[in-house]
Image (cartoon, rainbow, N blue to C red; front, side, top):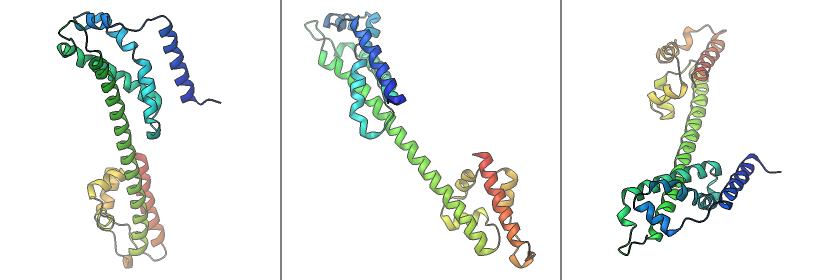
Length: 219
């Protein structure tokens, strides 16, 4: 059974096939007319390359990027390519009045490919950032528990920073502490000997829970 992604690709290809059944290939004459100022041909030229964008996405299968997003970005790249051509029409018109088809189609394909690659790079960057943030969050959670058990008090932001080598500002950002909880975390805690022995574990656990709950509310 096909999944949602496969179904969307199939429907998209069927729409393109249906469109192509009623439209001839763009001719060199039409491209020349476009380069000479007949901008009404823009959509027809773009639509003639939509199939090519779909084919180009196959080159990125191993990158594990959503095909629908790649197609959308590639189609936007076609629009960018048309703008490049419109701003430099003289580069695509030969002296004999014909069009430089290799340069014309090459520009559209290059811009489509660049748009897809930019999208993939941004996606990978975002995933890397999310993974790094998750790792730091887990580290802070474990460090808070360890230092609380080791020292008999909830660690301050400064202590967490010293122990984990994460900047204080970043710790506060990751934890998403409220202003009240920030003040509690920064304030010096009473020494273990000042705590009631019977209630010390409860106080520590409550403090940790308060910080972690504060983090959860603000994420």
